[in-house]
Length: 158
Image 1 (cartoon, one colour):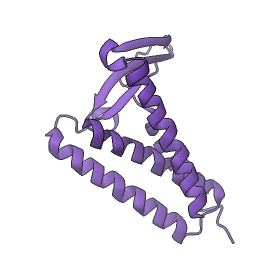
Image 2 (cartoon, rainbow, N blue to C red; image 1 turned 60 degrees about the vertical axis):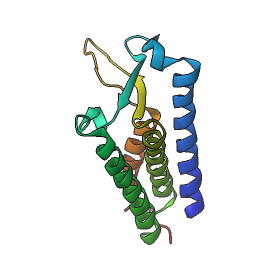
Image 3 (cartoon, one colour; image 1 turned 180 degrees about the vertical axis):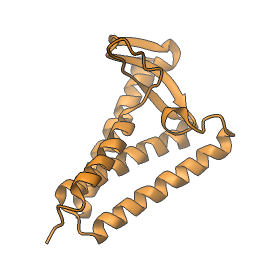
């Protein structure tokens, strides 16, 4: 069980960190600000997020908020692994837990290393401009959470 969670967490973490590395050090997005990939559907738009989703709590003292958010992410990641193991959740639930944990750890590393989360993906559509950026870790956190809701209770291992 721990192996499935660990592998999916590692894959999510590595994909997140590789995409952030590419955005920062290959595309130099921190300096150029915006790279049009497939406008308006996909634009790389640099954002340093000191808060949580959509920049919430980003206005608070960043030196304090940073460590509080790191602690919360680590506590949630540990709790998710404990809960999935305790409940004997099936393989899809284990993969979902790993995705959530890997994404959370990816953002934790950003907060430790950069002091903020590296956000760079921006998607807009249909005349609606999205002002917010996000990252691959955010996708994994949301996908993992949705997967846990869908698969955790109905797919227990015998």
